[in-house]
Image (cartoon, rainbow, N blue to C red):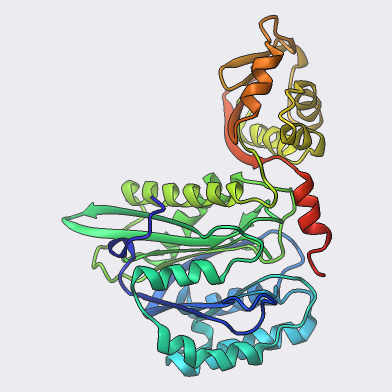
Amino acid sequence: MSDISQFLIPAGFRFAATTAGLKPSGRPDFAMIVADEAASAAAMYTANRITAAPLTVDKANMAATGGRVRVVAINAGNANCAAGQAGLDAAYATCNAAAIEFGCTPDEVFPSSTGIIGVPLPAEKLISALPRIKAALGAESDHFQQVAQAILTTDLVEKTAFARLSIEGKEVRIAAVGKGSGMIHPRLVTAVPHATMLVYILTDAEIEPAVLQSMLDSAVNVGFNRISVDGDTSTNDTVLLLASGASGVKIDADHREFAAALKLVATSLARQIVADGEGVKHVVELQIQGATSDADALKVAKYIAHSPLVKTAWAGSDPNWGRLMAAIGNSGAEIDPERIDIWFGDLRICRDGGRAVELDQAAAHAYLLQSEFSIRIELNQGDGSCIFWTTDLTAEYVRINADYST
């Protein structure tokens, strides 16, 4: 699903990236996705009440066009957040210049930024790079990969996901590209603005913006809103879904097959983001079952995923299940301590709130040595459940973030 190949790139889009001079490394840091015609669009943004300038502009532009986007302009190396009016001016200047370069209106441009917070964005560097990007635009797989590489910050690998399905004898394609490694605990919402996780999902299906938004909401809630690396919600997090209509296949709100494919792509990309978390040695799938509601199950999952004591135990492959119990009790979910059961994979760890008689400490430690493992918690309170993906917390994470700005 993550293998880049030309035939999986949706029709109706072109891609390119270049070096604008924002990253100290000198690597590519400015990417664009350009639709041949204005595409239907839906977006979700951070719930953080401190939001970057591009998100303010994006919301205004999406409202002005009724959900139509022609150009996506993404810079890495600078979050354009906490920069006051200068940040807004930089975002609008980029939109205006891109509109002239690509023959659209400024409100059909969707800017995004990722990088360090609190540093003014030199929009002139982006603007001067626009002609180079325009000349380099292409619809091949390598052009798509240029975007995947240019938007990275502390990420170690590019993140992409693809799907294709046959509808009425025609092929419909979905492709997604994203970045994210630290400051990952997306709380994406539709109406409120979410510099670290940026995701762009493209399809050549023909879908109206309202339908697109509903499908995106559903996909995000089982994917990006079910991951956490460090519990910090970024100021810039954005998920944008574009539909070019180039396949000629119309999708309505009741099309389950397309909705299912979209969820698969979103979940794949979400899990890739967790796996590339800063300093991560272990990826953990939390399976919370038997809660009074799905919301209560999510409370338990998030509290566990955000507990430094739990996460550092995972870093050392320490089967300290008592820390899980403490986190469950602190989560605010409705529980009965004497009815909680816990498994590490197939290994029973806790029974009826106490140490399972069959607990094999050495086997549990060996299981947690794996780079990926699952923990299942049965609360025995109801039918609520959720699956949540998270990581350990390592000394390398501290090192990366201790000197991020220097």
